[in-house]
Amino acid sequence: MQPYIPQKLPISEINWESLIPLIGRANRSLAYYDGILHGIVNPALLLSPLTTQEAVLSSKIEGTQATLGDVLKFEAGENPAKEERKIDIQEIMNYRRALLTAEKALKAKPFHLNFMKELHRTLLDSVRGANKSPGEFRKIQNWIGKPGTPIEQAEYVPPSPAVIMECLDNWEKYYHLNRPDPLVQLAIIHAQFEMIHPFLDGNGRVGRMIIPLFLYEKNILTRPMFYLSKYLETNRDEYVSRLKALSKEPSQWNEWLAFFLQGVDEQAKENATTVQKILALYDNLKERCIELTHSQFAVPLLDQIFKKPIFQSSHLFGKKGLPSKPMMSTLLAKLREAGILKVLSQGSGRRPQVLVLPELINITEGKKVF
Image 1 (cartoon, rainbow, N blue to C red):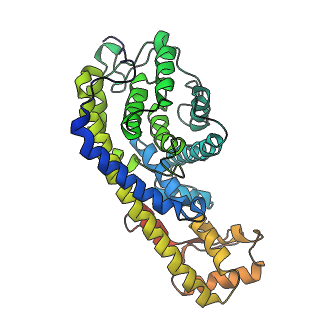
Image 2 (cartoon, rainbow, N blue to C red; image 1 turned 90 degrees about the vertical axis):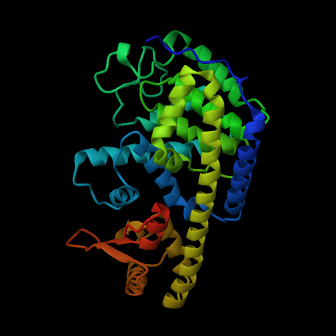
Image 3 (cartoon, rainbow, N blue to C red; image 1 turned 135 degrees about the vertical axis):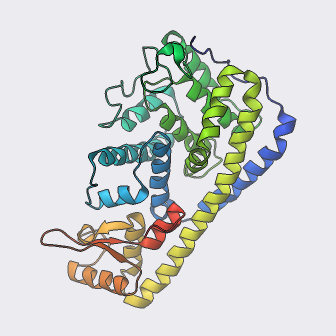
């Protein structure tokens, strides 16, 4: 099987007329979602679990099994029973760290290939793939297929290393062009990146991370907090087959674009609903916490809990803006008695109690977990 030779961008085989309805719906849904984001005073704090959930779902497409709860428990000091689950969690935490680092970097300068290499290095730090040239474009031929499959029987063979930089240079120039519709442009950017497959490992995660970063850099979103991985993970088989089809038949671009735009539309609506539920929960709990505690520290405490909805009680002691240890213990006890917080594990000896805000986890995961 010969290495794939990508088409030069921009793509000419686009039937714009057939895509107009999908383009309109996707842009409207995304604008509505961004309007909600724009109205949040501190989205990084209130929506912190959503960022972690995106990292969970994007990593899940690559085969990790850890859940949002697993990650938050680990950060609260609860080690998973299996060592491989700990590696899954580290991959997810790397993804989240790379995404947050990218947001800060894009405030200073545009996205570029060296920056993409830095994101890749962060993703593969101390996890599976750490021995596969983190932060470097591949210098050897790779291919996609079942484990042990020779290149002759591969499902897909990316471009030769000799042409990777030429492909990426064309890709980067297209990334920064002003095109008729940025969502169509983004769909092409994502697919072309995955077909170039410039790294030995971690290409899928980098490609999905580019989605919110592009929307943020193009000023379509006020924050890079658009999470498409749930749609892609739910429709994983179609996602993979659509990408494979592009490498075999250029006429499949419209089918890919329709799939991607449908995903943006659906996910923007779902994300908007989830964010509204989180905000409603926050407003409701803010009133309840103030009524229950009659304390000036009720809201700062709630903010910390939203940031880390699974936590050791001791992690809050001494934090700026929060009360003394005895008063903190009293406030947490009142929230437990009211059913706002639940005990995940009892304290024992030097081991502190671990608490959870179940409603926030359940909303973020879209199902009852606690």
